[in-house]
Length: 210
Ligand code: AMP
Image (cartoon, rainbow, N blue to C red; front, side):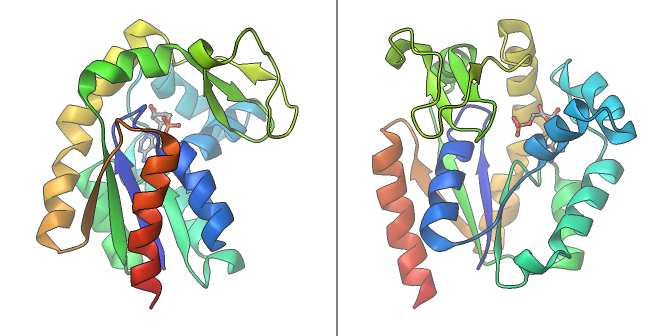
């Protein structure tokens, strides 16, 4: 199964991706994670990506598409994969169509009013990437999954979040229609708990597997 997770920043794509990855054995390919690893290692791609990410803008399509194309050629993607945060533009979706066949696009829909709070209150494990919200952490600073240290992403501040949401509306939201027209779109309400969202997603994936 080749799956795309679509949704605005803060919709819960990363949270669902780790559950789907654990439950269905699909490699989780997050372009945001790939860029952050490059920034950490101070590679040329990292240096370039940082200048866009810090402003809440998209890294240019040519760079992002090449990274994904290379990643999809790795052996672990042979039996399927899950893309999280890619594609984010119509041009990226068209480039993807040229190199692979997508089976399902899961679109997590969340009220926009919730996203600013979700993102600005988000804390992420620096080791396993698990996300938390400060309102439920009770001052805890370590990841309950792996014990890693929790941190706040640099782009999870009100100004950059606003820019990311604007970019989503202008450049990524049109993908909903793009994939709907292809008959690949599965909408799931993301205002509920991660468990409820995963239950809905699992039903769909189980049906698809048969
Ligand atoms: P994410 O972790 O998915 O929220 O991505 C963090 C940031 O990385 C985004 O705000 C973009 O600046 C950049 N990024 C991630 N995925 C893409 C993509 N498919 N195209 C362009 N930029 C991306």
